[in-house]
Image 1 (tube, rainbow, N blue to C red):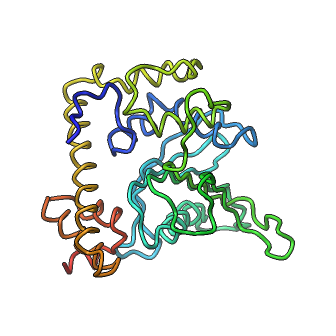
Image 2 (cartoon, helix red, strand yellow):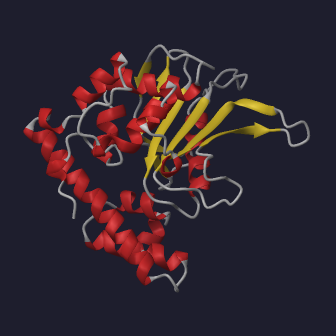
Length: 286
């Protein structure tokens, strides 16, 4: 097993690493830079405010959503930014379901309301490839909007889902041209780097490499990161083992076996649901 003590920089695919990078007030300029790079000049975010990450549906029950990062810009636009490590059978359904929460929350109670909504964006940074055969191996950036199938024009432009298939991004340092390229290179390779690449000379990356260097962490931060790395590795090992054992038993049973292993290891049920695609009810019945 790889020894995390040999890493100089954090692994952004861990829960701690991702939130350290994008989910703290101190580092919100990193998130702003990433989002602006993602939009490639089509819009420019000047500031963001972090919002609560746990959300319940309007009709009660246990249907809730827990976002990795949730924020709004200076114009009220809502952004869900998530790192998804494991492929799920209904991942697209889940991301669409999550996008309904910031839409519902805009409903105004009492008085007149004209249904004018602010923009909602769901950004999925995926540590896996979609199973769709329609996507080529070099197509890793997907921007999805509601479209008129006859005119092929955007019908509604206030709901956008952006997916990045990170395993497909294979540009080397000398191939990085845009800020978008550079941010994807960081997310793809950060934990494998031992020094700051010469191609990343922008001021924002100076701060990034200072913030993600493990040697700079407090003892509490280091422990938190090490726990997160262990969880990340345990989940991936459990999934690989379950897939191997359940290869002939079908995908659903494979997810159940993965969930059983996670629960046995004491993992939180919400985290198990996130990584397996099973509902909380199905997990409780295991």
